[in-house]
Amino acid sequence: MANDPREHALYTATQVRLIDQVAISRLRIAGPELMRRAALAAWQLLRRRWPQARRLLVLAGGGNNGGDAFELAHLALRDGLAVEVLALTAASTGDAGVMRAAFVAAGGAVVVATAGLVVPMADVCVDGLFGSGLARDVDGVARGLIEQVNASGMPVLALDVPSGLDADRGVPRAVAMRAAATLCFVAWKRGLFTAQGAEYCGERELATLDIPLTAYEEFAAGANLLGADVFASLPRRRAHANKGDCGHVLVVGGDHGFGGAVQLCAAAALRSGAGLVSVATHAMHVGALNAALPEAMAHGVEEDADLQALLARASVIALGPGLGQSDWSHHLFAAALAVEKPCVVDADALNLLARMPRELGAHCVITPHPGEAARLLGCSVHQVQADRFESVRALAKRFNAMAVLKGSGSLIAAPDGRIAVCAWGNPGMASGGMGDLLTGVIAALLAQGLDAWQAAGLGVAVHARAGDLAAASGERGMIATDLLPHLRIMLNGRFA
Image (cartoon, rainbow, N blue to C red):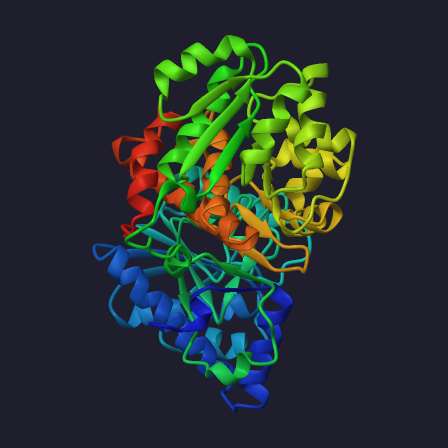
């Protein structure tokens, strides 16, 4: 799939069904032929990943996903594996019925699953219960099968989407299959890459089933994955560049007891290429900052008037790390936004923004985690996470700014509706200070001339990939400063 635009395009389940229909009705690719292609691709993946497997358990639903499963079972039977098939229905219709009949004709046996049935063990379980069109919570016999397989420890290959996972939102419908690998058919479904999508999908691969690109032309992808090309958005420095050419970031924050947050943010901005970095914080933090990070210019600021000269010199503001919500915090927050310079708004500045909402402008970036997003949108965290795509789109529109919704599968949205998704990153990054680093990275990229959309996308990508490099020593116990040397590596083109 080299240079195939489908590698990065994310679609809704409805769009993929329509693409499938175009392939069948206009391009004259028969439905059974698409099932055979899907099953063959899945069978080849299974043999690559589990070459020693000799016994398969295949779970087949009543729809097209079940048809793919029956045809894969047929291929496995033909190649000499022991195959047990559990089906949700006593019969299958349409193209799935054709595949079921072929499997039985080849000597395969189908057991109709009932309540209380004990799922047999196998080397690999193939999940073909439900596809991307599931629009209800999983219950009854299907729920029992999924729960038993999840508890068994068997590795699972999911066909198209792990059964029970909402293909658009990345959340389980009551319960979902936990796959070791998922082979997505026709086009990427957007829910596989955010919320709990990665947790349930395992490793993800795409099989377009040799459907021509013309079948996709009338369907605009609602989101796109960040790819390696995002790293090319930061141009090489000119040979005669000086620090003034690389921007001046002013970090504003660090209320009593939170000096570490501004230090992390400033360090990330420096490691991400900002020419100059200043810090406006409480005077009590200046000595520690000078000792730990002499490259940053630390200033004690007790009144908003003290901030004005610093704001005048800065080209970009990183507002919020450790800012707090005191009277001092309020004054600095208001003064920083009043100058209307490119700004990254994070942490306590987001909480203040939720209390005093205002449009920021497309030159600004907000970077909330789900809790902060909930306060900004006036809803619950559950509502934010239940549909992260709609949440990030609402954030960008409400504040007229680029919005980064952090978390597994971080999302970046523009006020015009564009959405990018970051599939990099790992659970080791769930520790204090990581958000302060991201603020500094994005601010530094803005200072070096990227627009807010470019800076947000590249910043999220660099931060996540630096986290992946740092996790080479293990995810548990990883701290924010572990990422700092890797930021420099990523921003100098070494992103493999």
